[in-house]
Image (cartoon, rainbow, N blue to C red; front, side, top):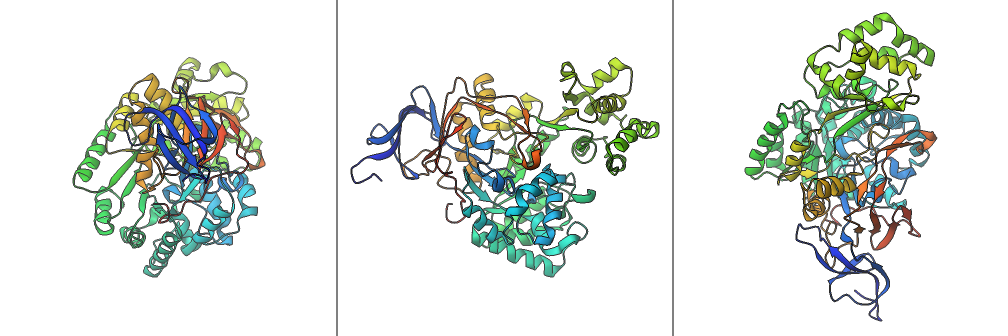
Length: 574
């Protein structure tokens, strides 16, 4: 569509257009009027504004199918850092966690759960969200997002844990639901789908430990509850399920549910194991068998090593994170619960210096599994001795002639518990990760934007993929990589008008320099509500990010007069 004078709003001229379908790129122009692409190729009308894209790649905005911006978007409507790396649409509400539906009396419980499972500091999230928490039901939540403009587009899933807390209250993480409660939850899932949810998310994995070290509420569901809620979603005639696997919701259970519901499942996640045992290879074979039988099961894979940063004040490594992935590495919740129970900082320091505590810690971390974890754990941010950054705890322990547990405690105590450590516990073998990325049955995801904010940041994945997997390693072509991050990702949730460059498609567009595009290393900033810290990474080589026809970013500068993102409602945009 053009104006009466035949002039369009914006032309992007002379770039290499890679359209998000996997097809070869070609040099041409793109014409945009309003929020739509109106022309692609050589015959693009005159425009009021022009972006010269010669020597650049022009592609669809990237669709991140696995984020946790549910709370952050209220105080940070730009949803940083995702748009700076080319993401123009984000799916929120993953893994069964979110902030709606929510009764006012459960706000603290919900945010405590998000703190424990998704690494969102409670005090900061409370300060940022609670004054703006003017919604209770899921439809009201969608309306609240729609009223508050965002930098990029938002697609929301109905989260299971949040739903369980809404219906079961404080017993949600303590017991099974009654048949009446399951029926009530199913009604609310139907209500959410009618309001525009894109699907239903849940988790059945026991590494998802929630408030007060109890299993996250969704993990307590039985098969009939999972089945009932997913079938309720399917009654809308659309929707995708996002889930982790577990003892109840294993592959066989997923097949049964897909048979009955007819709806796809995207599985979070399939990672390369870190011990060279090939467990991911065997799991992928089982997934292939399910896919070959015609079931729409799409495992999410990450393009980045899974590296967790932690301090002794938030010792996630020793509770539910790493030990849940490494055989022979026991959970240490009890040991560190006693430590965290101390209110005074000096009492915590004294606790870690106590010979009995140190002996218990040492004795419980001597297995082969823990030996492996100590090798993979490094000093990441030493406030006084930066020359130690990158040194593994195993190497430091050998040099100091002490046990690895003592070496770690010594660094923590010497820095007044301020030192940050880093553990890469999955996805570190690039040969194996490349195989997962190249597999036709996988989908790129598990990027976790908005979660684990002080511990990791993989929301920079698009620039990392383009620099590392495309330009440096040649494991993916530009066309493959862009397809994986745009059109293929949009297909997971049936977002029909996003993720491609074509006449009539939404005008979400990224212009970047293929020779320089990259992501910086992680750095720590203190810009969360209340001054809490998070890790960010800067984008390099992203020239323009256009959302719904409006230029949002030019390099690292916001240039839009008003943020152009929208709430996308399932059924209306799919």
